[in-house]
Image (cartoon, rainbow, N blue to C red; front, side):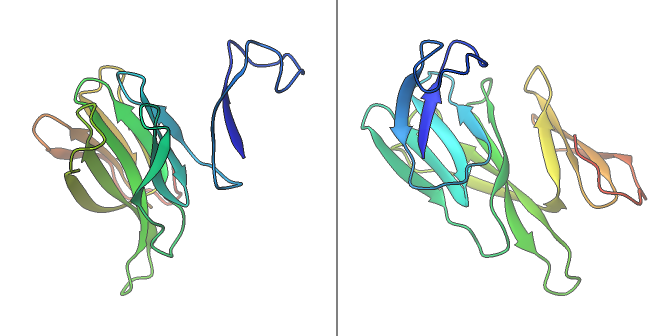
Length: 167
């Protein structure tokens, strides 16, 4: 599969219209979420595991491999803190609950430096940064939770829901 960037969608002239440019080839046929870093020289993407393509070295690097319970999802880049956040799919072997551990990776615009991975132990189904990139919402099987990224405080907004929700 090839990843392209274009001025706009809908020309029906792929891959030639809309000033399309091939970014890089990917060694997968399925890709989930994609996020640029703040300086625009790297793209993070979910394709089973989570990867980053570095335009400086023109190479893809694996951040995490698929743990066997499903693909990583929910990829988002926080331009205020230079952090990548995503859901690493996992299963609670006691309860059978499946969802994602929220994983935060410090990017600091230098992929080549060592990552600091800080998993938040939840079984999230979706997550979303707010417009100011200073807090996020995530959903679980029956909760909606607010997280203040500055303090790490988690505040349940809604509990006891009977249907999975997405934010």
